[in-house]
Length: 530
Ligand code: GLC
Image 1 (cartoon, rainbow, N blue to C red):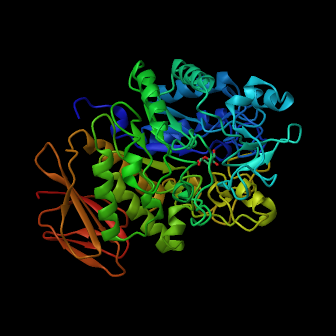
Image 2 (image 1 turned 45 degrees about the horizontal axis):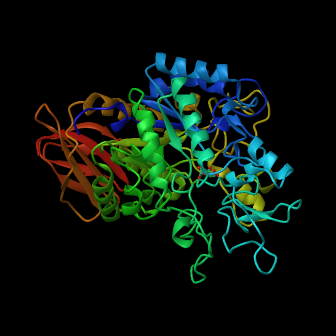
Image 3 (image 1 turned 180 degrees about the vertical axis):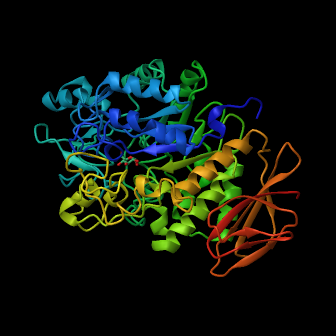
């Protein structure tokens, strides 16, 4: 890379706005709540915060159904609150990334409302209205990612409209120039307000195959995580990257802004097409989310990720949790052991070049909550008639204090109930405990900051036992940062003379004069000569 940019190595913290901090007691998190908690994020040691959608929305998908992308929903505050958040973050040295949702709008967006009101309106061309299929049913066999058909009938005209998500999230027709113009306006609107970048929702969507033909019947119904493989005409069309070419020109017109795409495709070579000096700066890198914590698998996936994303004008990203997937402490088995393995996995990714994206609550070791059925609110749960659990378990509120019922999140009734872990894993309960997960995150992020300026971006793999993943990055001072992870079931040793411990995921992982000792499911960073 020729020039260093903040986003090439930024640790980014995802705030799920509904569940972070509620300042007005309505049970839902909001922008002033986030602003008040920014010092916590600065202390944690992250570089940037990504705030999930806070725009005007009827909340059918909790804000990912946007009625006005240039206004704040009253539930979350005002535009002045958004400005205050950005100003306060900048004063603390934190950057702010906001979420854009360009694949679809809410059905309450003024364009769609007008399209429904008047079947002859030209605004209909900005969405995908089609005549019924030959049998009078939907025009094709596409399914919604949230379950059920991807088409709903507009009773007034007898036509159907396409929605790859909920029926309240009609897809835009990106073949219409007005859609491009509107999104360029939205980009400028937020860039001019001083945000540092965008997370782009469903970035592999936007364009659909022009003829909207059936997906091949041999393909099984869509897999909620990597739906594109089963629905080739709905996602990742050749034209979509041109949108980001244009957007890169726009963001390059401002100082040091970033775009990270939610490119939800399983094949890294397809994801790689979205990033580069003339397109997106970053894409989420999801294969690790679907992989077991296994040294060989991780080495393969990390190698492939570096090859795909460590390219000029771009940078890799590392993701283990977000608001759409099961929290990684739970994926790795849950309980004490799952949480320990989650810390080890996180430490391993924090040592790599690129941007780790951390999800709120993972620094507390939160596990997936089992939200009682009647309290669940995810459209996936609702549309499936209660057969698919949905994502609410990853979205329960942040426990700031041990004090029920609001746990410092809200003085009212939280929109999703706290699970049994809230008191014990609250920020207050971990504050001041050097053995806590929170203290571990703070140490690891502080070390990362202290080292990164001098670290070479090249990752050199070190060989060891099959359950061990080990890599080194040279430091300008002559030593190297060595990261070692033991994914096996037994304690292992790793020969490395003269190593000094920097940070470990578990106090039982130690460095002696000639070797490192790593209990099962632990990782450590040391300084050594390699
Ligand atoms: C993305 C979001 C998810 C949302 C979907 C539709 O995958 O992360 O939460 O439901 O897009 O906008």
